[in-house]
Image (cartoon, rainbow, N blue to C red):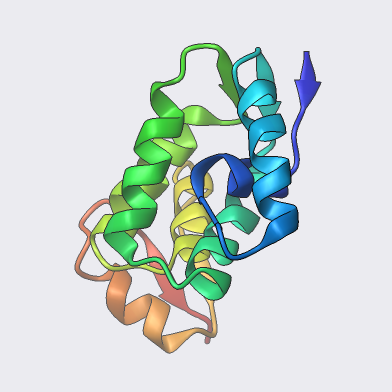
Length: 134
C-alpha cells in the first residue's frame, strides 16, 4: 500500500479545467485512488487548507468531499474516527485545524490555548473542553 500526498486528493476531487497540468494529472490521481492507499492525517489537514484557501470551497463543500473520501472502503485514513469527530466539530462552526486539535485531545482534561475565538466557539459544543490559558 502506498501513502498519498495532498495534491493527489486535490486532483481527484477538484476538476481544475483551467490548469493544464492539473487536467493532465487528474486521470493519474483517479487511477491512484482506485487502488488501496493510505492518507495521513497531516494530508487531511493540508487538504482542507487547499480546498478553503486556494479553491475557495465552502465549509459544506469541504464536508461533502470528506464524506465521500470516508466512504471509500479501500482507502485507509489515519485516525478515521478522529476525522469523523473533527468533521462534526467543523460542521458546528470550529475551524478545521481547531476541530482536529479538539478531537485528538478528547481524552485529556482540557485543551489549553491563547486563541480566544477558539474558546468562544468551542463553548457551543458540549463535548469540548477548551480553556483559555491563564
